[in-house]
Length: 375
Figure 1 (spheres, helix red, strand yellow):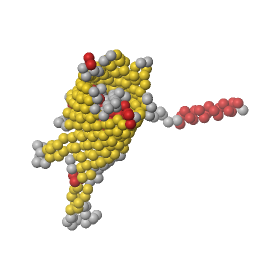
Figure 2 (tube, one colour):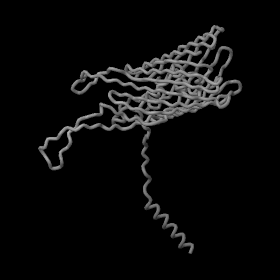
Figure 3 (cartoon, rainbow, N blue to C red):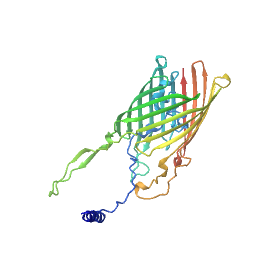
């Protein structure tokens, strides 16, 4: 009986070995959803301070730029503040941001409003027949309007939410949508050093579907099958466009004051980001602040950061089926940002100016300026 059982098991094992399929070849694929979102201007930031810190700012921000980086930080504002910033972007485009926020109920809660715009105007329309332009022009105007509410739930935790309306005008087409931002800020101390942590979700909302006069065309219908030499009347038609999602961004940040002595503060900060249209990224920054130097009312700040650019490992020709060898690699000057600021305070009144320079790799460097008022 034992011999029969042993032979039976051996036969089953041999059959399985012979009939089992060969191991499947593992094919590495990249399912990252590159180029699948619209309204990318929603990721261009707010204020020169945040730009100089590489966007790794969500845990540290407690001024009016929290309206963009972390709604939960708006509740930490000590006084009302207004800021206007402008960003000279590539190819003669410009991005501008405006924000105003008001603490309420003795600082327990706060509200704020912000707006951003990006685009260009009066660009010539070129065709194959008229490569220098056919006399027509077109413009791009992308804007958002946002309202924010934030609240302190304890002496260590605050949270906020923003609702934004988005309008995306591309030539003679336009699309509208809505999105929500949600952010939290946890603040405590390590020893005697303040530490802050944040979690933020940005641009969670509807899709954008463009419609407009540019999609209206005149077509000739195909004649019925088997029928020839019958004139066909032109018919009006409208091209249908695909809807695109918004650039959703998840941020997790930490900021620690490593030095707080007299007028001097040194803060190190880092952030991890997970967008829905590219690979995860990370960044780290350093801010040196000198507050009310010599009781003069003047404060100064110097800032620097580096943000990992995972897309630099991509060859831009791969998607088109060829190799260009233009990959930049992960550690290049692309992602470097520097800047500084000056503020003057007298009583509750404050006026400030901030500047940032950011390296965009092959697109060159760009400058970000912002002006702020507090009262």
